Image (cartoon, rainbow, N blue to C red; front, top):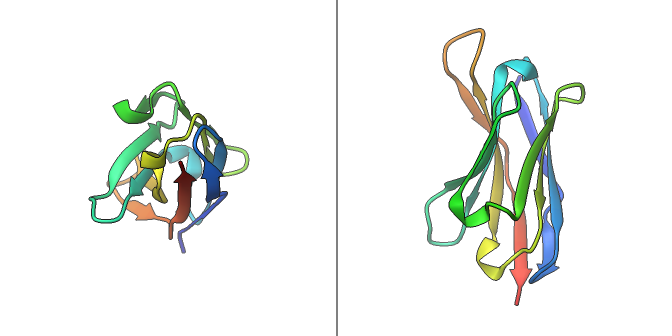
Length: 119
């Protein structure tokens, strides 16, 4: 059974920082591209950052230079360090696992964690 469990969300003032964590189980973690997406009220879910099995990363333009995605393959975990937070970063943040190696494409989502940035 695949599980992705996010943690680390909360309420922070504009300019502050948060670190999100996602613990994965039930998958061969090293074979998966991991990512973070977010969904604000009334908007579609959008990719924030992804990290490939080899460590390459990609970011949405809106978070470049402020957010950093990383992974710890020994702990089956992916992180999102969010600095210089803005009110427009307020959203539910979801962890996603996308199989990149060792089988057909398949993906799973976590349950989400709320991030609220006050002005």
